[in-house]
Amino acid sequence: MSISRSLGWVAGALAIALVGSGCATKTSQKHAGIAWNTAFDAALADAGKKGRPVLLDFYTDW
Image (cartoon, rainbow, N blue to C red; front, side, top):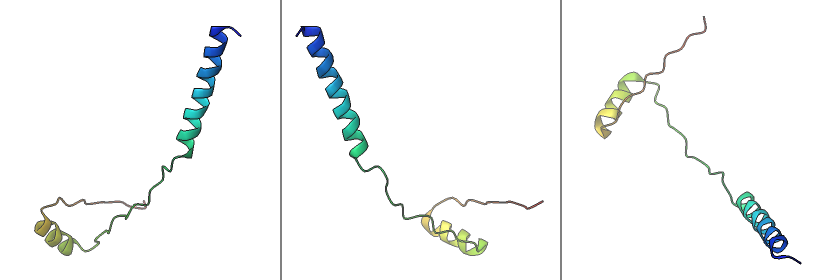
């Protein structure tokens, strides 16, 4: 068996091992989510206490 053929086999085995280990790792995580506040006055008061910005989301069904 030649050296280049052996290196090709080793490189192929290494590539398969790396892809297999990457697919086996857990990538999905549960997120706590966002607790949306729909009351404008309460959202402003809460943002003021915590020093955070307020996001206003406007939409319509026209």
